[in-house]
Image 1 (tube, rainbow, N blue to C red):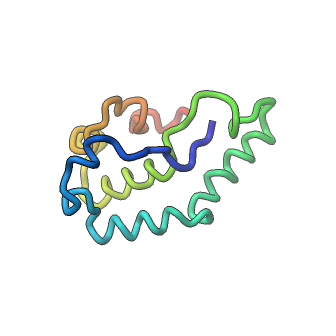
Image 2: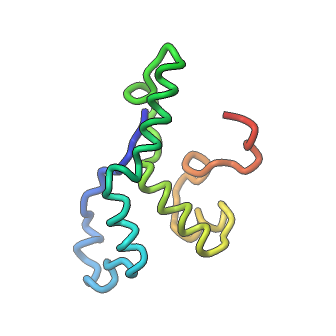
Length: 111
Protein backbone atom coordinates (compact mmCIF):
# COMPACT_ATOMS: atom_id res chain seq x y z
CA UNK A 1 0.00 0.00 0.00
CA UNK A 2 1.43 3.35 -1.01
CA UNK A 3 2.14 5.82 1.78
CA UNK A 4 3.16 9.30 0.67
CA UNK A 5 3.51 11.08 4.01
CA UNK A 6 4.07 9.68 7.49
CA UNK A 7 1.60 10.53 10.20
CA UNK A 8 4.11 11.42 12.87
CA UNK A 9 2.70 13.51 15.63
CA UNK A 10 4.74 15.23 18.30
CA UNK A 11 6.12 12.93 20.95
CA UNK A 12 7.03 13.59 24.55
CA UNK A 13 10.67 13.98 23.43
CA UNK A 14 9.65 16.71 21.01
CA UNK A 15 8.27 18.74 23.90
CA UNK A 16 11.24 18.11 26.19
CA UNK A 17 13.91 19.19 23.71
CA UNK A 18 14.73 22.90 23.38
CA UNK A 19 13.29 24.53 20.25
CA UNK A 20 16.77 25.13 18.80
CA UNK A 21 17.52 21.41 18.86
CA UNK A 22 14.19 20.54 17.25
CA UNK A 23 14.65 22.99 14.37
CA UNK A 24 15.90 21.59 11.09
CA UNK A 25 18.93 23.07 9.34
CA UNK A 26 17.88 25.56 6.65
CA UNK A 27 18.46 23.16 3.74
CA UNK A 28 16.39 20.37 5.34
CA UNK A 29 13.65 22.83 6.30
CA UNK A 30 13.51 23.87 2.64
CA UNK A 31 13.32 20.19 1.66
CA UNK A 32 10.32 19.82 3.97
CA UNK A 33 8.62 22.68 2.15
CA UNK A 34 9.35 21.09 -1.22
CA UNK A 35 8.01 17.69 -0.09
CA UNK A 36 4.72 19.31 0.96
CA UNK A 37 4.00 20.04 -2.72
CA UNK A 38 1.75 17.21 -4.01
CA UNK A 39 3.43 17.38 -7.43
CA UNK A 40 6.77 16.24 -5.99
CA UNK A 41 5.37 12.88 -4.91
CA UNK A 42 3.02 12.53 -7.90
CA UNK A 43 5.44 10.22 -9.80
CA UNK A 44 5.23 7.69 -6.95
CA UNK A 45 1.42 7.70 -7.11
CA UNK A 46 1.55 7.42 -10.93
CA UNK A 47 3.85 4.40 -10.72
CA UNK A 48 1.59 2.66 -8.22
CA UNK A 49 -1.44 3.48 -10.41
CA UNK A 50 0.35 1.95 -13.41
CA UNK A 51 1.05 -1.18 -11.38
CA UNK A 52 -2.60 -1.32 -10.34
CA UNK A 53 -3.61 -1.28 -14.01
CA UNK A 54 -1.20 -4.14 -14.80
CA UNK A 55 -2.05 -6.33 -11.80
CA UNK A 56 -5.22 -7.90 -10.55
CA UNK A 57 -4.72 -6.07 -7.26
CA UNK A 58 -4.61 -2.49 -6.13
CA UNK A 59 -1.21 -1.64 -4.60
CA UNK A 60 -2.51 1.84 -3.74
CA UNK A 61 -4.88 0.58 -1.07
CA UNK A 62 -4.04 -3.07 -0.39
CA UNK A 63 -1.03 -4.77 1.13
CA UNK A 64 1.56 -3.82 3.69
CA UNK A 65 2.15 -0.06 3.85
CA UNK A 66 5.34 1.28 2.33
CA UNK A 67 7.66 3.61 4.15
CA UNK A 68 6.34 7.11 3.58
CA UNK A 69 7.79 8.30 0.27
CA UNK A 70 8.59 11.71 1.77
CA UNK A 71 10.63 9.98 4.49
CA UNK A 72 12.38 7.78 1.93
CA UNK A 73 13.34 10.83 -0.15
CA UNK A 74 14.69 12.61 2.94
CA UNK A 75 16.81 9.57 3.80
CA UNK A 76 18.18 9.26 0.28
CA UNK A 77 19.05 12.97 0.19
CA UNK A 78 20.92 12.68 3.50
CA UNK A 79 22.67 9.55 2.19
CA UNK A 80 23.70 11.33 -1.01
CA UNK A 81 24.86 14.53 0.73
CA UNK A 82 26.99 12.69 3.25
CA UNK A 83 28.32 9.94 1.00
CA UNK A 84 27.18 7.29 3.49
CA UNK A 85 26.26 3.73 2.61
CA UNK A 86 22.95 2.20 3.67
CA UNK A 87 24.37 0.69 6.87
CA UNK A 88 25.95 3.97 7.98
CA UNK A 89 22.76 5.86 7.16
CA UNK A 90 20.69 3.42 9.21
CA UNK A 91 23.08 3.67 12.14
CA UNK A 92 23.36 7.48 12.04
CA UNK A 93 19.65 8.22 11.77
CA UNK A 94 18.70 5.49 14.23
CA UNK A 95 16.60 3.28 12.00
CA UNK A 96 15.28 0.36 14.00
CA UNK A 97 14.83 -1.94 11.00
CA UNK A 98 17.01 -0.74 8.12
CA UNK A 99 16.54 -3.95 6.13
CA UNK A 100 12.80 -3.33 6.02
CA UNK A 101 13.15 0.34 5.14
CA UNK A 102 16.11 0.68 2.81
CA UNK A 103 16.71 -1.28 -0.37
CA UNK A 104 19.45 -3.88 -0.33
CA UNK A 105 22.05 -2.95 -2.98
CA UNK A 106 22.52 -6.67 -3.71
CA UNK A 107 18.84 -6.88 -4.78
CA UNK A 108 19.13 -4.56 -7.78
CA UNK A 109 17.77 -7.17 -10.18
CA UNK A 110 14.89 -8.24 -7.98
CA UNK A 111 11.55 -6.44 -7.50
